[in-house]
Image (cartoon, rainbow, N blue to C red; front, side):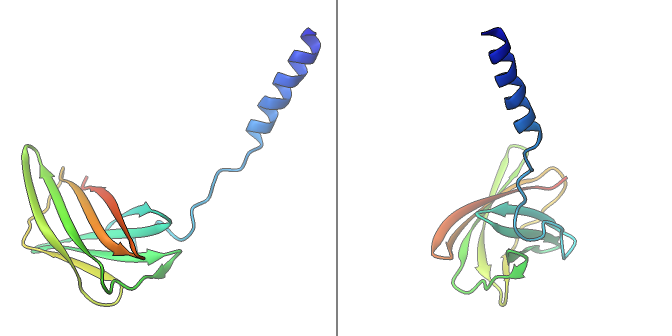
Length: 126
């Protein structure tokens, strides 16, 4: 009985070691010098700018149209909470205006109509 148990455990360990890591679709590297996060197989790249931010949308490594997508960006700066609208800005971009973003900020983008769905994307500026 002990030998059978030992062989079963050894087989389980070997099968776990031989599993391949799951690979996400698309490229998670920033294409515009920003911060990339993934949600539902889509990539969102946040690029901080002096007057707000731009969010680029990618679907499996290809630009995704931003038409009809809108939302709200919540920015946590220490104990301060700021909200700003997210609007489509053409092609595969969304734009946030009127917020000053900086190191240490935590952001939550609540988006609607992304392929007919609502989703939340979180960013942290390091």
